[in-house]
Image 1 (cartoon, rainbow, N blue to C red):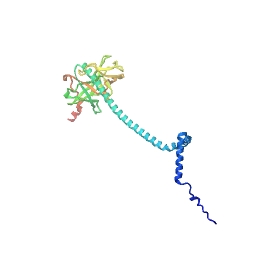
Image 2 (cartoon, rainbow, N blue to C red):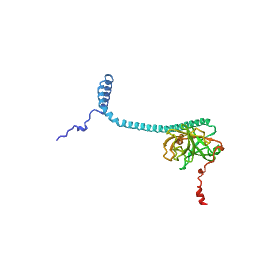
Image 3 (cartoon, rainbow, N blue to C red):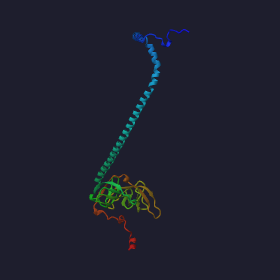
Image 4 (cartoon, rainbow, N blue to C red):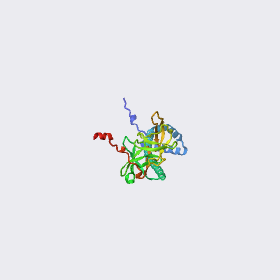
Length: 302
């Protein structure tokens, strides 16, 4: 068998590499020149762009997703920050509004009391309510004026709406006021419509005032306003005390049961007016306020 003298196909050599590169460069330059002047490759580029466009969009989806989530997170963070800032400003504004409203209410109350002082013949003193006492058996408040300001037990306490109560205990800088709803306080009152006179005393519940020892046939109706009669020499006559809200007619041998609501808004009071009447006009304080030992019990102890 004769051996072939030709090289195997794997080792066949064609054109030299430099020549092939030269041909490729000349072909590329020719294509660039022809495309630049004649545009022969424009349809090819347009076709390739249409084919490659979906692939490009698919490849840039992850990038767009990352950008979208980053912007969404930044927007949410900004909104949360703005909400916190707005809530903080709202709280600050609400506190300022409440303070302004409180100051406006106090100013109106003080202006009303100043106008009231002009109509009272006696000397008066403006006082602010400090707190309510913790005694469950009485309805009393504490004011920020005491003996060093001229306040003494027995001085009437009023406001623009009417009678608030009466001073029952005094310290150098504060005073304790028994309200009209306190059962230990009795105020002579009159009914202007019928001219009837009676005594008004608190029921102890902090909300009602009851008429004592009224005539069985007295003409009293719901809505009548009780005013001070001035018979005690303490309260000026004509000051509103309470408004009748319930009338129970008397039975045989009984007094009618008549309850009323104080005209002074005791639960919302801020400032009151203390009438500094002469000490000679104040009757001695009742011994009941000191809670003495009953006479019979004291004799038994002897």
